[in-house]
Picture 1 (tube, rainbow, N blue to C red):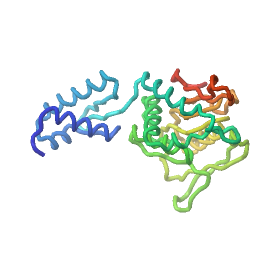
Picture 2 (picture 1 turned 30 degrees about the horizontal axis):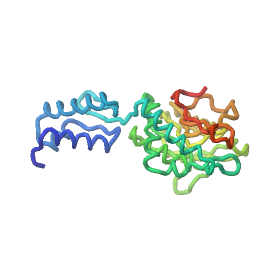
Picture 3 (picture 1 turned 45 degrees about the horizontal axis):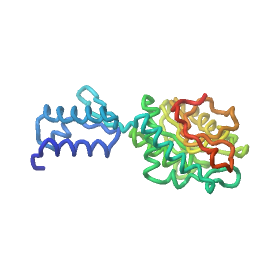
Picture 4 (picture 1 turned 30 degrees about the vertical axis):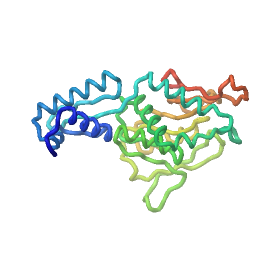
Length: 275
């Protein structure tokens, strides 16, 4: 690569970091790219770090030591989260989304790359101090949200399924009572999916009574995992007492009303845990 001007180096450094959230980069990595001395790279990174933090566009974390370097995390500031949740709430408060059984159609949002990335980054921002080893979800609609959360932390995604698969080896299977159907169901996780004594975040798309999340918690106990947090896209107001005590819900759904002046989906603008 030809010797670049500082503005060009700053642009490339930023692009590399933005494309690889949570990845550790040594200063030597950038030295080899730009063919400049370490002090110059340090000045460039300091400039990028201070700019991002001043404009609240994420954080560059410095890891000291011989094996150290820098990591970029795309945290979202609270004002931007509130603005975004308000916008999505407008989309969700569409009566055409109401489905038989009291369910709400959300697939177009969950499987949209822009929305899934934003929602995943909001979950990651909420639990940025958790430092999880894995992000855990239940197939299938929770997968995009959990995957985008895992991308921020740069950790593996673990998917709990409703049955074991021969191709995945020995699995742990448990029964749980679904909070939505009140039926006994089964969830399964291969032994090789995660190491014991790990820390995890559980991310899912919907919670009514909390039975499915409760099953996840029981399954995590089988792996001796520490659950650092539970995040769901949408939870219902009723039942008020759920099987899960603490969780973070981006949106809450009230009883459907056909009065446009009374929206049935409300964003959680307090950004706090439900207890």
